[in-house]
Image (cartoon, rainbow, N blue to C red; front, side):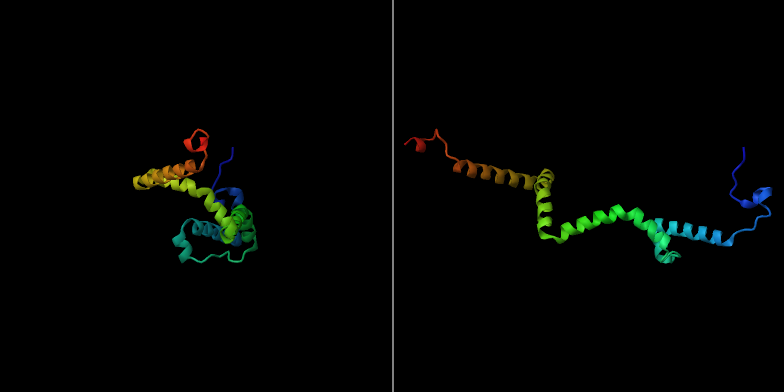
Length: 135
């Protein structure tokens, strides 16, 4: 079983192989780009060596294609007043109920409003058993 080495100079058969400086430079640039991606402070202070690299742009487009499509759909919802209103109304009642569970004043107001609405609706519904309908 052969052993794995981090250094190409550790094995006797690799001793005569010249070091490819360009390959080492590309690897260092890639590692730096990974570090810039992970650490925002480093990204702000160290410029990228890959600005305008078509291979990197192709990779970004493949990796971010789903996110870009989702963002475009969200942007459409925000920009179109009708879609924005539909999206807002779909969650408004749930948001109000959730807020009422967290705030007792809002819960009391919500119960009073709901009771008043039910009384108002029941007053408009004709009842066959009421005294006014039998006259």
